[in-house]
Image 1 (cartoon, rainbow, N blue to C red):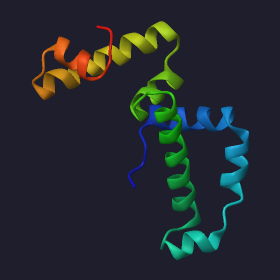
Image 2 (tube, one colour; image 1 turned 60 degrees about the vertical axis):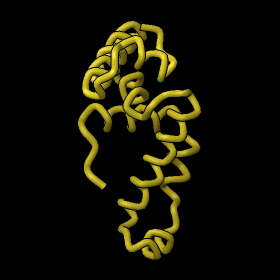
Image 3 (cartoon, rainbow, N blue to C red; image 1 turned 180 degrees about the vertical axis):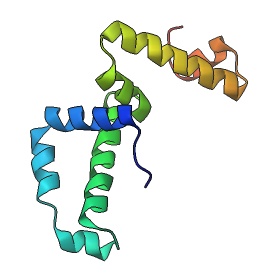
Length: 109
């Protein structure tokens, strides 16, 4: 697993601060479970954290990168602006019109 970028790491830290039960769970993982997967305890913990983060994003109807933006943006308005900017870039890379992309992803553009 590659190291997360600075913003993503900040989002993970904030996510853990908002979910103390998860932090406790991650701090008490069984080292034998990590060993059984051929991972260090740190790698195993990071994997569990990413799984929880992605599950939370899905629960909110977001992509994980959107949750990262949400947790690191200085305001809800900035989050929405950045989010739409990235979605527009993705639409362009995918060769879709903005209207098609918005319909495909239930976005209001």
